[in-house]
Length: 264
Image 1 (cartoon, rainbow, N blue to C red):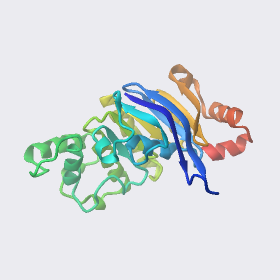
Image 2: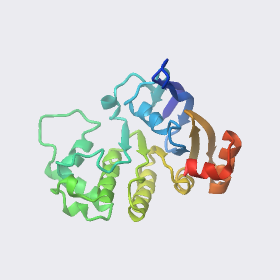
Image 3: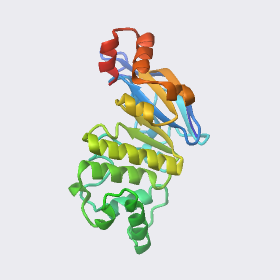
């Protein structure tokens, strides 16, 4: 489904500010894999997501989606295969447009655009049915401007927009980090439900180690642009936060308590 081969990218090359953002990244996801990604700030997590989405091109390496080479395909063309939800609830939607207009844009993401109304009677009914699954009452506010929604409501809408066309790949870039605890829990539960319902191949960046352990069937840890740990299946299920921190300490070195601050 998704295959990354020897991905590397360096920022500010040959300058005093040179940084190896990604180094020799090799990662293969099968259909339905749900991978949680943890690591310190600057570890390369969001850069990895940007390379997959096409908003950044790697210096070297290949990106394949469904065995198709897409490494030189621009972001707007990859959007037919990829759904993405960002950390900022204000991103990923058009605040001056209504809920139904935003959904209409997402609905045609993987289709050829035509010169006709984006919101039809048939589509409006479909949108209402999908919104009802959120249990937030948004199905009764189709003509409300998205900019008037709360952060949690907007992030729930972003998640729906990113998934209801069942993309090949779903990217979740710390999509609960900017929310208060109750809204973050809501979005986490919705994420689990939606990913499971559509069996979406998913990568989720998070600083919440418990969330990383609870969700998904695979976990990777990144540090200094590299994947330093990969666990899956029963091994992942047996992990605890303490064991994860100990493993990070073993691989990276350093003080245990400072590692908790770095990862969490």
